[in-house]
Length: 218
Image (cartoon, rainbow, N blue to C red; front, side, top):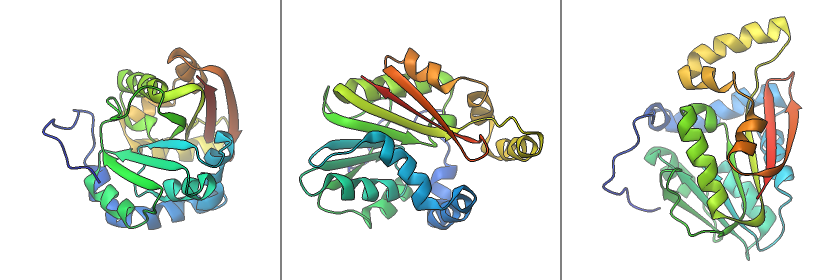
């Protein structure tokens, strides 16, 4: 894992991510049980990326690296999987899952430390809702920069449900998530991805209309 550079973390960063690192994996497993289990939830992202052996894949806001490990299985030993995050404690746990074709970096997603057109695919799951809207746009544009022509981006995040009962429960959860999440669910994710420069934008909705997955192509 790369060392923390001298540049301070952005103002929007929530240290909660560092504080919950020790309980993050069991918490995700518990919450994912409502969505058919953690593996099924993460496979939504993997299937949309249409991964092939030897590809280079970027996972932004990778957390403890579980998705990276699953992606690494898909691209094989000849591939490369990079996870970036701003939470040191999350990345320490990710390192324990690291294999030969995986690496992790403490990095700001607005300044991804890789050259133009380096990756075949990129994803961000439950990350955009943690950011103010201008930062979301910067992150998506930066992800586009490091994608090869024809490369795929996949975004999985919350969607505000329409059913009265589910919506009332969802609104309570948004109080926990905070102001950036409440702003996020008021916006149209497909338009956000399109406005950041991606084409062929596709939307799928899952689990009682509380989750959305958007795929775009550079």
